Amino acid sequence: MLNYERKGSGVMLETILLIVSVLLITIVLLQSNKASDAGQIITGGNEALFQNQKERGVELLISRVTLSLGVLFFVISFILFLK
Image 1 (cartoon, rainbow, N blue to C red):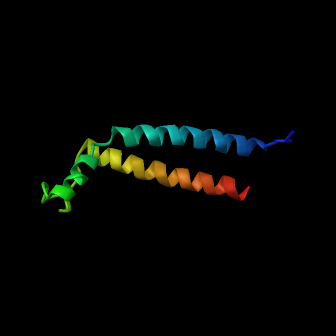
Image 2 (cartoon, rainbow, N blue to C red; image 1 turned 30 degrees about the vertical axis):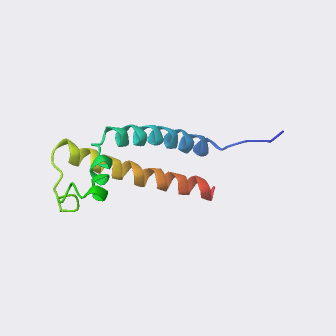
């Protein structure tokens, strides 16, 4: 039997990590489907795939939230690893 005892801050960080993980999964699923565009590389059907296109509105917000949640996920994971 393992003696698994965590300090209060460790449990709080694990809870925050769990919430960030669920939010990150949800926000990634909300993003527009870019994989279908990437599949057209083989057939050559989309010449504008690698052109620099600006995201606007909701897409820009979702991209920024995804980046923020991803960075937060790795920072919390690293902190928990060091404990």
